Image (cartoon, rainbow, N blue to C red):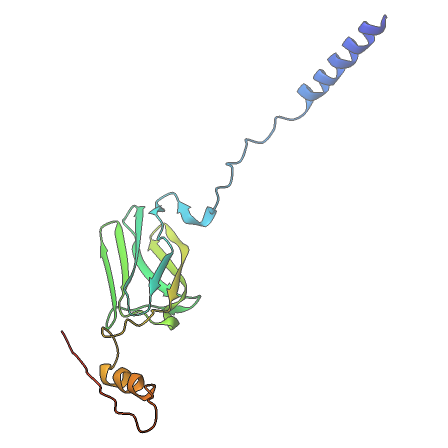
Length: 172
């Protein structure tokens, strides 16, 4: 056997050994980025997006769900607290679209929110976040105008024994 014959025979033996191995198991499906978000008859078409909202503003989360039958959706704040309709909160579901709207946002509304979809196939969920940004007050638009005016007048100083005049124009 020459040098090439030896390597050819070695290659043949390796190939035969590979063929003689038991047939491999069928390849498992590649796991998706979030395997809990899809079952055969229950899935998210569109997950709610994170939102940044100013204090006293309105935050809206929208999720689109699919499945047979169309799943029911509930909304949670954090891990355990279920959000219910009423007051500042509106929860609607029309077909595949589920919406959570929170008005008059406060800093305590910041945090993680979960959308949980359920039907006879099971339950899936996804998370999103709300970031509440402090609102800068706009003089003359928000707050108590009289208190602001008093504060401004207190900071006004004059020289002793000097006549001063104050002129105020108020427009609306």
